[in-house]
Image (cartoon, rainbow, N blue to C red; front, side, top):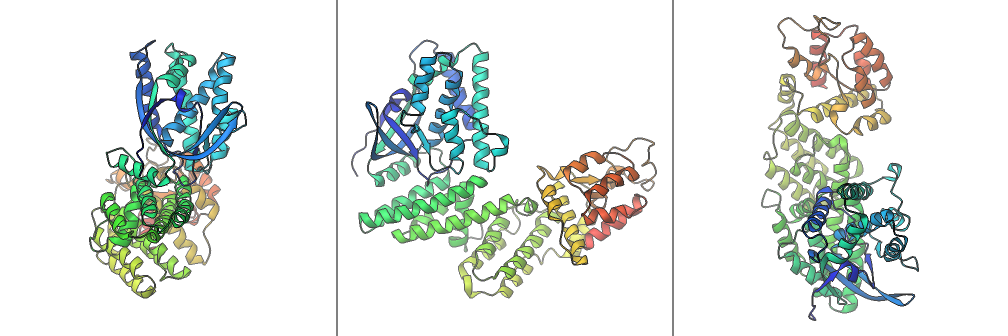
Length: 565
């Protein structure tokens, strides 16, 4: 590998004759509030400590691939670089430049910044080709237009929207403290320093990236894995032509992975650990650590072809995990890692047909809710049982039967029989900390009532209930938590009953869309029923509407029905 000398640049010199591109196989913009606040604090500290001076602040290391392409724009040949590492910081700084441009008063300086961001041939300084929301980013750089809330469709959209708003908020505070946009522009252009590694050797790019990360830089484990796999593909391919073909295929696969987590930000270490635990961790009986997962992947990928196979596994696992995390109706079940691992295994196995898979997943869901929901066990329970079963399902593949899988799922929950779960439910007198489980139980009761009628649940109401930000917004206390003293609820509970314990029993809870739940409050039962009627289509509500009164006996009776459903 040729020697690559790191060079120090200010942003003014770095952006002078370069155009940057973020390739499709890179992670989308994913900095969160904390990282942006750290950047803002660095800028404020530098300004406060050295007003009018020439002190520089080293901000980061950037790794780039020099593509060899050039874009002639008037008298300047702009070289095109692909950012391999450092895109989060560069992207944030470019957005900061745009926000500053919008606030500058001097028309000449304003035009200068605009031409830095958007060249005379309409090419952008930073082209976000990897983002599913790149149209929002590109429009912002060209026109300064902040996305509307109606345009926010994915997690990536929301993160970009938050970044623009937080940058504007930072500039507001900057100006409130007596500094100007011009002061900040001078600071950012001339006194922020970056160490840049760039090379035309595409193999060397990933070697540099991996080497830098081995020195303790904070990088997501999924990004590290991508770099390792691409490095192996280069190293193990039999020819340059074969290496290029493998890398192109890997680029397409990684583009799919990052598009998936743009919808929901599954942590990279979770994707890595789940994949490795399924394919390499059967013997250990617990999810592999990130470090061990990386070691197993290195050992497995002893040729270039296996890097493709491994990346396909990572992509499949990513897509399944995104689906699990985005399904709010599973929140009461899938908060435990080993439960998610087994769920992914059932989704991936070739041993099941569509209907068999649906039934197996339903059994996985019910068993897991019994163990971790009704019995309220923590994440240390049955780790080995779940992980070994998940690995067995994936590794055995088509050689196992539906019956074998179902038998093992039943065995998984055999220590937590349904009759004991019922007693646990009836004995529970808490609601705080049990909101998600309560919503799950009540919705399961809705499904049970629909099945008794041979009907389907109301999907529109289902979406409203599960779209609520928290379960508490959808769980109504029929006997109110704060009844008016001496009011219509007086005498409705048995003498000597501790009111709070009765109010928070599962038999007193009702599922409602958020808009209705907030209106019910502490009204009388008759007035509440008028509100409940607006949830037409919910069978759990219809059963309560049939009651002429709501008292201790009604709570006891309903609780037994819920427990036995």
